[in-house]
Image (tube, rainbow, N blue to C red; front, side):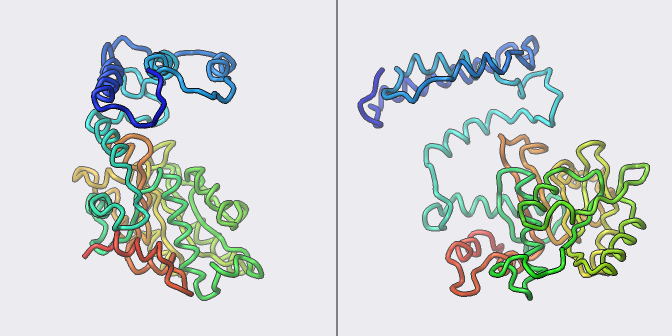
Length: 345
């Protein structure tokens, strides 16, 4: 079927949906026997897609067959029985259907009136995430593209709030002594990238040596903070990890919270890898202090088996989130929308 229009006859559209549905169902056949990874060289796969910009589209049946043989059939098999690598959750069938419905309504969530139901659902899902880990009921938050993005958002809010008195959002980082962030040497690499993106610089991310159990060494952390203060640096954020990627270690979050208060630092927790396990009564005590964090990063596409990518950043107090983002000159319209979308009444 070649198309002269983007609009498809309803009956023909129903046939296309049926054909795509069959490709989806095929992915759930023979899960036990199927390989987790198909080894094709990069050069071979490159050649599959190395086409010039087409002037006309393919017939749908031909396009679907090409997609099936070159993408879905040989994709890394996250949903199969033999996938153990890279923290790959398999998603779930309900989410496949939800993705189709989401693409159908195709909502723009930049303004509440453009997507009322989706906005309210997102607001509620964010609060549910906070409820699961024992956070608070006046949180601000937003769904983002993953744990790395959630950590970047948390550190951005930390920077904007901590240096609000310096009007840093308008003036930037110039003419200030360097700002320093503190984390275990087991912290996820996205924190390094966040420091670079925010203009703080990875040199100012202090990687503190870990204990034998891979948690941050509190004594060495405090020593480093004091050294930096004496050297004229500006300590502003301590990052705790609620489940490191390498070993699943959980920092002493209560102690980190106390140090953050002592030295007037923001306390951010990277819970993308293991934070949601705080909802389990059997290990909840391991996460004591998580509720004291100023912000928390989480991943819903890991423990909650959502499709990639679904992360979430939580901020302990809604007003803090609003103040970190609003435009002082005109009360920026976008963040007025966020106020309407994410405040929990």
